[in-house]
Structures are given as structure tokens and as C-alpha cells.
Length: 221
Length: 221
Image 1 (cartoon, rainbow over the protein chains, first blue to last red):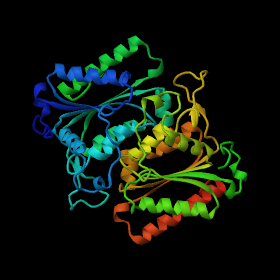
Image 2: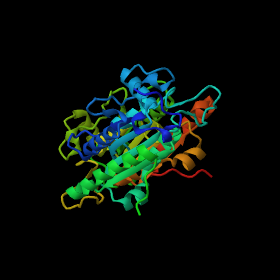
Image 3: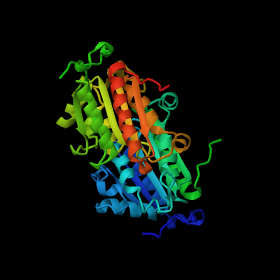
Image 4: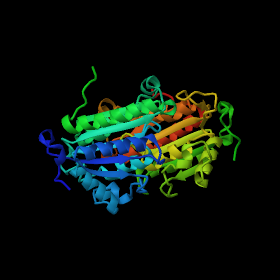
């Protein structure tokens, strides 16, 4: 365990003083999502980053938010509390999931619904009027999202409007105060060959290392 | 039961020849979402529309798509098959849910993941290349989405990018061939008074009736 890393000081940290939470949401254990997840975990281990790793399907996570969790009381589910505390202790959050209907799989959507909650990731103290933005409590953290998709980029952006971009960058990260984030959609999975997949895994490793070390990904020349 | 209504002929139907599927996704039984759901069901009953009504929380729906459901085999879950067959037998689909993170609650996201699937709502016959749009099998159906939100319209549209609009209009309805749809976000729930809520319920009734009778909602003068 490391102390809460949300104070915005991680630019000056050694990588072995960092903590990460890494989440995988895919039901098939031989999926490319699993390969990305494992490569991310290997990279963080090489960099001496303390890591909370969660394969949500393997952990049989229940994504249905409860009535009690609608309010400000603590969740009655110890797993939700554990995830929320790990989240707040992490400097880096990594999510690996396929693009299903322009959204994460339900198991990860429910993780967002249940775990990103007051008084952890954000809060609404009484002085904040209804409809106003909340108190952001994830400022200074860094986010990475790796997605897989079978939709061509042109159709994703121009027809579907790439809702995953808004969802992660604004609705989740931005809402809670995370400004440093990187998202990469690997596509087209269905007809990708072994060489392409190997290159994608190398890219996932490089992105993870760059975000850990500098908080950003350098543009390729 | 009615025959499959996807042939685009419902403009000429009597309302008592129509079939609807109506879904609710909210855990709190006294929520405004429940009030909308009940008003929609009352309206459809008044119009003699045969209706499949599903309160997903009350039915304890499991939203986690299985490995088997990743492929083209039939789901092993009889509830998923039942929903899928009702969906294809319905001329009108109505979804009632709050805006959680720019997306539906996980229980409804998982309904989309598991129920809108081949060979029902869409299909990929072998001749369609990977990455191409599927065979759309919901053409001619009509869709209504009622949402509740605590986010002001300006912030929803200009900061979050209103991902629910893309998700329903393009990623779900458009993907499967549904062109006639209407979506209404009621806001701000948290500080709405009784008179406003009564007006919103009347609007939900009017929208439902107009979509049933004509397939579209008239602009107010």
C-alpha cells in the first residue's frame, strides 16, 4: 500500500513510489484484451509500480448499483469499498475493454456506477447547488484506456460519434478531475494478423511506460 | 403475441395491432423513472397496444455477457432468448433510465450487450466482410428513450458531449435499422417541483401516444 497519491506530486516521484489500479473487462480468457492487460501488468512490474490488478469477470463482479448506493451512505458491498479505496490510493488508472455499443461492457459500466462515488472519487458537500459540478477528488491522477474494436475509424468517428471518447475523457476522468489521460482504440481486431497484434502490444507497453514516467505520450515523428 | 412487426407496415396499423417492449432501469421503486414507466404502460394499455413490460431491477437481470454469447450461438440464458424474441415481435421499443456517466445504468447496458444480438436484431452473414455494417433486422420499428438527469443542458451538450444521444440514435437504433426514434431528457431532477414533474409525465404520455399513432412527435408551436 502507498499513501493517497492524489496531491499532484507524481511528476517528481520515482516509479517505485507510484501505485496503479488496472481493470480488465472481457469474458474470454484468450482475448486480445487479456493480452493487453497482461502486458500492462508486466510493464508496471518492470517499473516497480505497486499495482492493484482486477479482472472483473474472473472476480465475478456484480455491476448492479443498489438503492443504498444511490445516496451518500457507504456501499454495503465490501468489494465496492475495497475498489474505491484502492482507486483513491492509485496515481494511475488503466482500463482495458472492448468497444461494445460505443460503451464499456456492462461489468465495467457497473464498476463505474458503483465504485466512482462519494465520498471517494468526487463529492457533493451541502454548499454545492444541485446541477453544479462536484468537488473533484481525483486531481493529479493519470488515466489510460485501451480499447479494441471491429468498427473502422471513419464509421466510428463520423457515424457513431465515438462516444467512448466523451465517456472516458469528460464523463469519467474530467468529472473527477483527471486531466492527464491517453486513450487508444486498437482496430480492426477481427482481421488483424499476428504481426499487427504484436505491434499493438508493444505500443500498449510504450504508452504505459511513457504515462508512468512523464504523464504524456510523445507524438511519433 | 403478434407477428414480427419489422416489415415497415405499422403506419397503417390500428394501435390495437401493435406490440411494444418497455424497459425500466432504476433501482429505487419510488423513483421518477418508475413514474414515467408506469405512465407509459398506462398509455399503451389505453391505446390497446400489446405490451411486454420489464422492470430489469425487479427481474434481477444479470447484465454480464457470457463467453458463449460472444459468438453466434444462442444464449444459454432463457431470459435473454425471451427478451430477444419479444424485441423482434415488437413494433415499438421504449427505454426509461437515468443518465449515469453519459450512459444507461449497467443493468440496461448489459441488456443491450446480451439481448441485441444475432440472429435477432442484426446479423453478420458470411458474405459481409469484418468491419462492415451488419444486416439490419429492426427496420421499421420505432424507438423512444426517456432519460432523467441532474446535469444542466449546457454542460451536458458542450462539456460531456451528450453521449446518450449518440449511443441510442446511432450505436443502438441506427446500427439495427431503427430510423424513427424520439429521445427526451428530463432535467434537473434534483430540484424539480411537483408541478414540473406532473408536466413531464404528461409529456411522456403525449410522446408515447404520438409515436404510436404517427411515428413522430409534432413540434410545439
